[in-house]
Every structure is written in structure tokens, then in C-alpha cells.
Length: 290
Length: 66
Image (cartoon, rainbow over all chains, first blue to last red; front, side, top):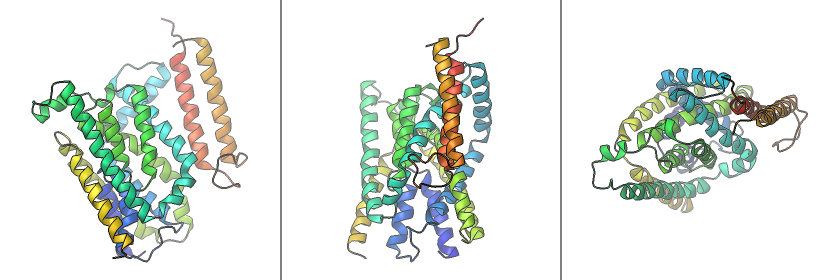
């Protein structure tokens, strides 16, 4: 992988990680479409992607630095006291409940998922599936809005009728967390399934996005802790890859700021349509070797 | 569901998770791992987190005295 390719991959990963369009899928499909010579099945490719994810996690930590301080303090306070008294304490426990299923599924299904990882055809196929999932989430949300007689009200007012992240149940947090494991499949978006899960649990779009971003951070950091030493020991150009990770972090920060603003009234539909279109076009290009 | 029995059960579960984490970290345990030799830090971290969660749940389940 050349330096320019590494930087491109960093920008691509950072820009697409938090959008519900699967950064992993794009990172698998686009190099194949561009006929880049580096092998995605190379043992350094996964650690490289993890390093880029660490850039994203860093951006999320910066973006939510005040909340993370409150969450960590809240976790220790609630854990030692044995009860929850503040929203930050509840959020910390919800994040723990959401992180465990993703961790268990990730650790035990890692090998099988990696065997699917290297195929751009699989990634393009799952990108289409991801698009239908996003449209499905919005379909169910519109149904919930109709049931609550909100469909004639302005979007901002509709959104205010739904809950904040701290209000969801622990069972819902665990289910949303388990959904994160789907994102180990290239083409299925982590933020897409977790935002969708949040919507089904009755959260506002913006709150579902916030919960998704907070939930992603510990898993990405834990994956990075384990994979990065492999990258350092394999003789790859670490300096170039770190530059790509920094670029990834900057792009992720800008993406997160945009999405949090967008989801004040925006929906997942445009991303669903994009994923279906991009997946089908990618499949056609790959099949006809264009 | 607050009871001393639940709290003790969760505490014991936490200790078991902690032992499993140590065995994975030392490379003694190879069950459900992708390779059959060496330490498995990913598994060790997971079981350490499960242990912490169990201890936290045990403290939540413990009946509180006023």
C-alpha cells in the first residue's frame, strides 16, 4: 500500500465510519473497484483498519470528552454504591450492558467473520442488505409515529416526542449492543444497526446516534488494544499508517458533528437508498470486472 | 431482585470469570480460540470485563441497609 493509498483509506474510513453506510464495506469494495494491488487478505490489512478505527475512536473521545468523564465517574460511583441515582450513572451502566454482547459475539465469531472479510462481493451484497435494514427501521419508526398520532406534526415536534438515550431499558441496550456484532460483516454498518436499534427502542434520531457513537467507542478501543501490536511487529510503515489514522480521526470528527446536526430532523432513508444503489452498482462492476 | 443469595452467586460468577481471564492471558486455556497455542488477550479482556460486570451486578443485588 502506498502512502497516498493509506491516506485515501484513512479519509474514506473516517468519513464513512459514523455514517450508517458501513466503513468496513467501503474499505473492502473501493480498493477492489480501483484495482489496487494490495491484498485485503494480507495479515496487516485488518490491523491497519483497526488503527484507522482508533483514529475514529479518538475523534469520538474528543467530541464526547465531557460526557465520557461523567460516564466514567458515574460508573464508579454507581458500581461502588450499588444503585443508580443520576442520568450519567444510568448511561454508564447502559453502555456496559450494550458492550458485553458485542464483545462476546466479536471474540467468539471473529475467525468465521474474518473468512468472509476479504471478499468485495460479500461486502457489496451486505451493503444492499444494510440499505434495506435502514429503510426497514424508518418504516417501523413511521408506523410508531402514526400510532402516536404524530404523522401530521412538524419533524422537530415528532422527534421531541421520543426519548433520550438515558431512558431506554437495559434489555434494549443489550439488544442494541448485540446488533453491533452484525457490523463485523463487511457491508453492514455498525452505526446503522445501532441507530436503527435505538429508534426501535423509542429514542429520538439524534439520541440514537449519540448512543450509537458512545457504544462504539469501547469496542473500537478494545479491538485496537489487541490488534495494534500486530501492526507494530510486522514491519509495515507505521508512520504512514498513523498519519492515515489521524486523517481518519479528523474526517470522523467532522462526520459526527454533521450527523448530530442532521439527525435533529433527518432520517435514515437517504443512507438506505445510497447503500442499495452503491451495493448494486459495486456488484455489477465487480461481476463484469470493469 | 435483591437478595444475598443472588449477590453471592454473582460474586462467585465474577471470580470464575476472573480465573478464566487469567487462564486465557497465560495461554493455559485454548477453548474457542482461533489458534491453539499462546495467550489469548482478546478472550482475557472479555472475561475480565464480564468479571467486572458480575461484581457490579452483585453489588446491585445486595440488599441495602438504611
